[in-house]
Length: 234
Image 1 (cartoon, one colour):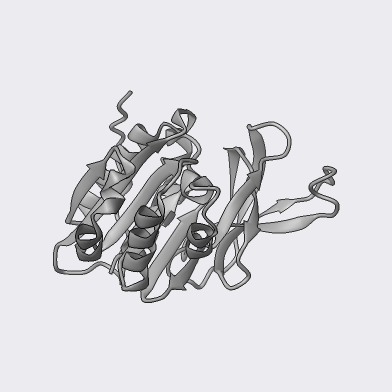
Image 2: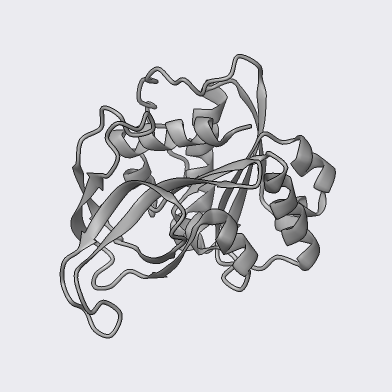
């Protein structure tokens, strides 16, 4: 399946770099997240922003430490999966030294056994209580941040992710779990949806939205993700 939608017009971005950047999108894992389709959309965004984009269909790319070090942005469009100690070390070392990492949805539920990866990303999926098609509001938590500036609260019908979160992340958007759903949710809670953080010298952007191409292509989501990709790149 290939989707070729019109990408929304680019807003002014203070993070757009004049020189050509290199990005690697690593796609695969759980097929229900349509990683190939999502990767194509993300690649189109980056190409429009004058990146040289490589799409890898295998985690073997993480064996190439030199390539990762030369890359300005890694986009892991991968859900679940496993990394060897060498792959994980090459990946996290590259980000610590300045390679950016950014992505959506499955990036927050990849390599579940790797705590070091979760620490780098800033969170880990736990559950989406209730139906996978919940209608909820995405709240703009920091409206003065350029990554979400000009975007108002909006409603989506998709998975609502309940996550374990690094308390040091800078939260951009949130959602409210307002119903008690034992045993996981015992009181109402505001849950981050998207955030930024640093990992060593590298910048990290994550957005839990993006379960399907239709959600990623919502104008508000696409605008946030475009800005996040640009911000995270070295």
